[in-house]
Each structure stands twice: as structure tokens, then as C-alpha cells.
Image (cartoon, rainbow, N blue to C red; front, side):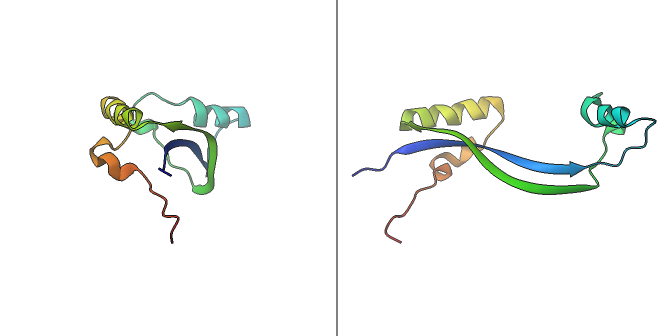
Length: 96
């Protein structure tokens, strides 16, 4: 029996805690979610960050040609590690 390729898609979640000085709570909410001027002066760090885990949101079988296309697409988009090629494939060893 030959093994198949699968894509498993996940979302990683973090809880971030920010400390904001403002007149009202709603203004503090806006500061965290709306500030995006691109200016380095507008960047602020979380006082605390906690990793909440990874949640699987989907998956499907793929062919090797689709994997190779994925590598090309991530290279163009700058969203992956296409230079790693087939090293990105996690191979399960059922004989361990």
C-alpha cells in the first residue's frame, strides 16, 4: 500500500495582553485593533503573550504535482519555505 500526501491546515492562536492609557475602554480597544499607520512610532508590544495552541481547520488529499505547485505559489507570494522542497513533507514511519 503506497502512502498518500495530505494537506492539513491549522490556525495558531495567541492571547496577547496590552496596557493602554486612554479616556475610555472603547478607545483602548480601538488603539489595539485600528492603529496601522505604518509608522515605527505607532508600534507597541504586548505586555504578555501566551500560546493557546493549534486548531485544525481543514485537510484534503493532494497529488505530488499539487505539492510542487504549492511550492511555486508560496515562493511567488513570499509565504512559505519553497527552497526546502520535499523536506517539507512530514513522513510517518508506521514501523517505529
